[in-house]
Length: 315
Image (cartoon, rainbow, N blue to C red):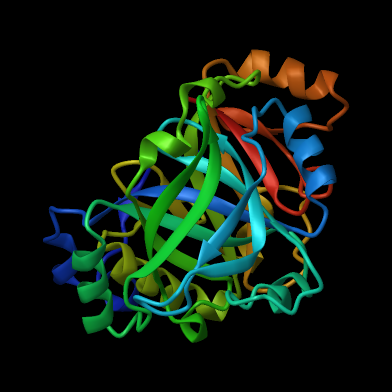
């Protein structure tokens, strides 16, 4: 969660897969599409994010299939989102008695409620699915997903395609790649202005056991088809829009000082870029949050931000 430019490539070894990644020039995955914060209390979580200065979309319930071409059905979940035009923060509420849980989310939130997911964006789901399957990272195929949203003239159906990474490879949570078939229905202009001045999702931060750092960075490098770089204690997977950050548990205190680690691996936080850090700080502090300084901005800890720290960086 740094805006530092002091980055160096992670050369060779497991982390960089040597010269094959350094030769990459094209991104079939081009952004962090959205983060996913899981909650069993949508009202309280939405209220906290609104107090942090985010405009949220209305509640929208998911329909999807567990297999390619399968019949869509209720997913036991619905969301409210802070939308920025191309990227967004998703607050995913779990509803019902837990008997409908095709994504197998509830075992994750039994550890802690907070960030357990991240979706990366792509222009062609078939191309990405083929590469990930050949890399041994996914067997899901291209899955259909839809949810009804409120349009200016009534309810409309937003449609997506998703590729899920094999859960056995992603102990941190549900990691998937999404293609928006109807992006205009999600990123409606009336939801894009935020009192805190947020303009886009900057990054997501993952904390792992020290012994797992190199293997985790290598996995994300393969998944995202990008070259990892080191920025102080962080290992950064940059994309044309946004970045994934990974840090060893022993160095986590250098990145988000004073934050607890309830479990490992742990998606500890997310950062948004804002137009004016000073104005954002005044709003957030004025709404009763404790803020702590970061290079280029500040953050609110997981204890007040519903399970995952939220950083605000000059954008």
